Image (cartoon, rainbow, N blue to C red; front, side, top):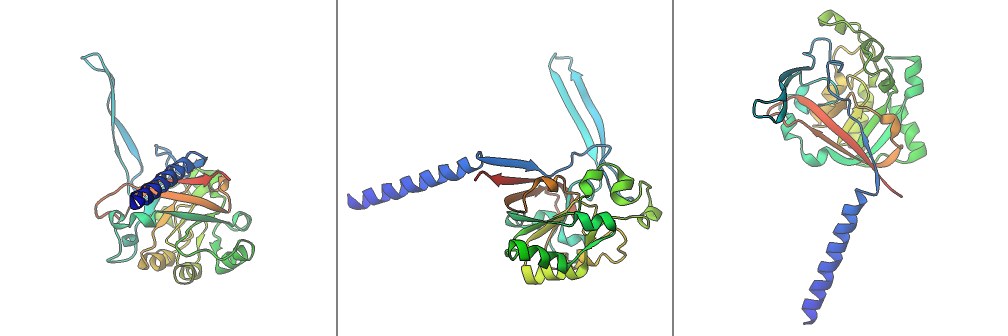
Length: 265
């Protein structure tokens, strides 16, 4: 009888704890970090842009209302994930990224003032260390988000990425901030983050030719989130990121729905 009482007491504690945890998701603020997909969505100059065509919209012969569309686009455009396979052979495809790598504690480092002076600014190790002096060491398995202030330009392509032209020649005109390869190495080996994201078209800066930051992070199977929205609405730390991409088998990336949850204090 005593064992039964102890078991029931334990079970009650577990149930109450579970209900409390569930309630936490209603006692806080959700922030959508995703740009909507439309004909205005920004894509790499050589990538196929988003297209949506109507299959049917209206009332059917049977009398009920029905709507359906087809859409097509490149993997890499709008708010999306770069899977490690994108720049590193034999690394995770988008469907192979572990779910726990896409959900976790987030931190934001802001470099908006430096980017105002240089649109090709590269996020540095010094930026990380300066931030850590104020906020503490970035915890292992954090999801790091870098706020460059570029979100304010969306969806103006020329202001956001340096050009609104299309084609291979337009790539030479790209201008936007990114992550310096040295910072990428530091984050991968010293801080061991599990994902990184920023509000620009790429994790390398616009003038990059070798995409070294992509190579460094992806070799370590660290995915990148690009064209993330609303980073200015997040606190510096103390929030959860949930970043779930379209699960394309063998894909090098895909459209991403990324949100943040800030629990009420």
